[in-house]
Image 1: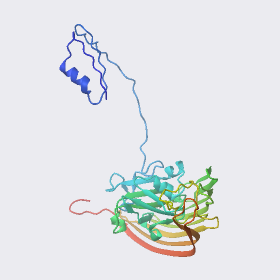
Image 2 (image 1 turned 135 degrees about the vertical axis):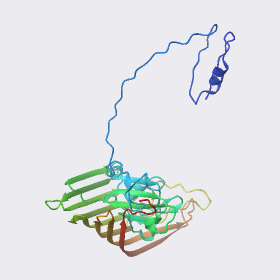
Image 3 (image 1 turned 90 degrees about the horizontal axis):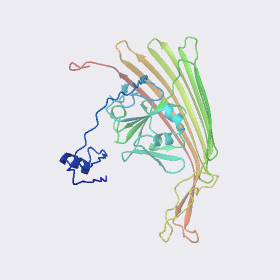
Length: 387
């Protein structure tokens, strides 16, 4: 901050005013005019009445579409974010739609403190606080990703929100590292009929279609269903890379009693990318200088592919007891199938001739299955005079 002061000999400056001019008061910028001769009298103060400003609004509930103020991802209890003893980042359905975050990579890249590390076009690691994220959940139930990474393009069409619990959620996931726990919360049927269809187009010939329908299946609304489908077809800034994917998700809820809810659902996603990269471009030439490839350069021919098929079926039984306790039983089965044919390029090229690179072609098939049964109960109890 620069302060200009002009002193007039015929008018001595009070000490307090000199200090204020030299250093400023609380970072404020002050202007003073000092005239010669006797001190001028201060202008008379006038009362100014500002117009009344009235602000009206409505407090958002815990399930408001634009903001999520409650989350059970950290402790299994439906606590407010303020009451949860950990930092939580919530990516709501509104954010996913408004910013067109159609895949988990894009969604988590917008979460505070999460690093999305794409090894190649179809393999991704997630890190936080310097550690790999290894704890992943579906509706609060741990379901680890195979090998701790995401293969393929995981779509967000079936999710209502994504919770990121920073640090280890040790109460629900046993031992964990200090990175984070990511909870994917799936959509559920609604009491009233609702439907939406979306069509979008973007750069690199990207075309996407979404449809979401939820409706009561009985006249009394005790049985409800929801179906979500999505499809996308897109090229890339990379040469020869092309992605086709399809998503289907269906879920049914039934009130089998006044306090008992039965939920059954199934989802499947198919990814069909071609021209996929395996490995990365060389960094240096043989003379030590840095390579300078165009941004679109890819080492993969168009006949390479990395197909992934993921199927998840689940059955959940919830019961509310008269004493306020709630019990939940959930069984989950997950199948992952991968089929790939790729080319790995490695070596150090000569700057003038381009020689020095080698290729390693590979084809493989990988099948993995996971089965999980989760039982939990929660409620209030008294201990040492406290609830």
